[in-house]
Image (cartoon, rainbow, N blue to C red):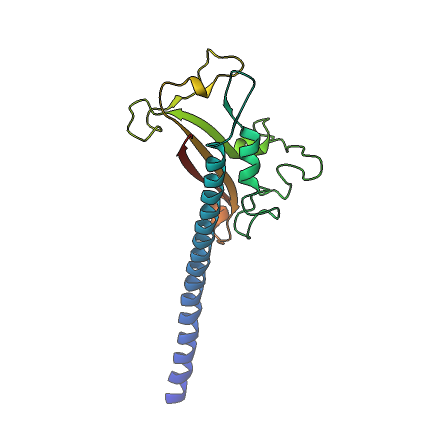
Length: 199
């Protein structure tokens, strides 16, 4: 009788362990996913800061019109973590995470986003020049462009009567590791932005 109870107890412990271990491993996987997402966002934040800081100092444009040098800003964002694309969390050279560089390293050809028809790098690295209309140090609620549309071609930042800020927003697609993620979505888009006063 005692021998039979011991066998029953061992079987019960095995079933309890299997149930508990499954839950623990699922939670562990979710924690790893959240941690990797956190580090990815930190990488995007560093890239956005690098692009915005560079863009705040170096303007370009034809004679009589100062504009943000968007191509140079996007290049600074892409190369913020070096020419290998990153440290394993966010590949800044392949922001849509499809295995194809956003800009071909040899030819400089930009990959086209099939959904929008735009270059992937243009969709995933957004650049804005905002005027601080109410002079409170935060131009985002004002949502007014710094460009003076009366100056051709394409406007002129230098003609703005208000302080101008540059905002760089960097997006990246992240493939989830969590086993139940496909029930929701197997990929999530992460983003980070940085705003700095034009100098």
